[in-house]
Image 1 (cartoon, one colour):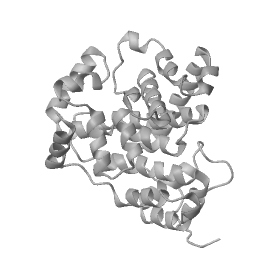
Image 2 (cartoon, helix red, strand yellow):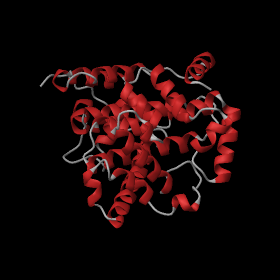
Image 3 (cartoon, helix red, strand yellow):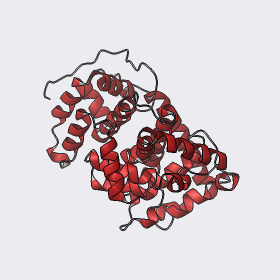
Image 4 (cartoon, one colour):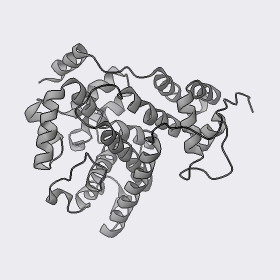
Length: 309
């Protein structure tokens, strides 16, 4: 199936959620140069969404980020977490809710745990290796497999067969999709990114995350997301089944492709990069528990704190 035909088919089938307006506005605001971003506007946008505001306060006061005193207002949370983490948290909190009522072949909690895990591990790897485009790494990791939801919602019957065969053979999902569907979740994910008008760079990471060598222009973010994706699958934050033993034997196949691109990666021994990835996946598991906790509430009142300082 050609890319154009697949695009038309997805548009015709519909039944996919539009991006929430708050995400679109945050993306638009944060696409500006840093010295032109209106912090107060960001605070107000978040304050209008009580669920997101509560999440920001909850995360800012969690052991993951809390450093000094209690954070009691959205404004304080924005400064404590930073603008990019606020955007990433908005996507992390909103996207699972967008797909919550859509029938899908794949278990949604399993999907979002892997997505959040990949995002967190990718961010950690990007920091350790000095990757370019660091502000986009988390979101790219979060959305890298969004095409799996597209396929699970719009092509439920066929995708059910994909999952069954992938689990039976213990191979990655994309190894089976082409034979059964005629396309992969990387392609349908790119189409959704375009329908949502996400940045081109992000859409390309989604399309090439499992084959960064095919990307026309080498990209740090794509390589980092691929490594994080594989690390999560090998260390228990995958799709509920183990990959065949030769694929899961070690993390060497995850790390080695990073070395030609990132000089800092060459300084790690097998012991040290294995310890690093185990640590990052463990932290990602904690974050996934935090974001996916049912009935997310905060013990603190949500204050807009719209005063200028």
